Length: 206
Image (cartoon, rainbow, N blue to C red; front, side):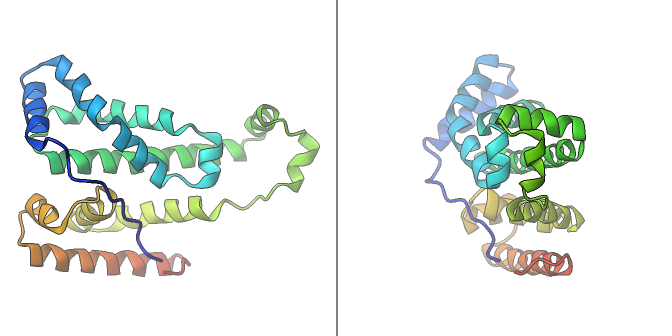
């Protein structure tokens, strides 16, 4: 299994973004709206990249984007640099998608909610037995991936988020971690090996 990497063009007008962050710290509420207007398309892209097809069929990505933005409100006021901001949004996008997948799985196990879901989708109760009962492979992988990340050391989790979810260049990852670029690459390699080892132990082919 190859880790998913999101690739985005370089941050437009990075100095302007840092100015917006400084204004947020100074208490300028309009600056928060400017920041989210600048990043809402990227946040939506991160959310969609994390969603499996089954989850995407039942949950609107735009709703999850809004949840990411709401969860970030308590954090953006303490951020002063663009790489950290990207990491925050990417990390929250993964958390929000994982939470939505878990909620969906719980709802499907609840007979009353399952009937309600079927009614909305136009599926008769007697037809439920014809649908696959096993979770979609993408959702299963997402949950296992999250479990493995939570079991890893903080520096391993962070380097994986910065490189594979935030899509940051190695030099930016190194700057965020306050390491040399060579040390950051070595750390990423060790983190990827740990992640693959954990996924194999959970029965996933890597």
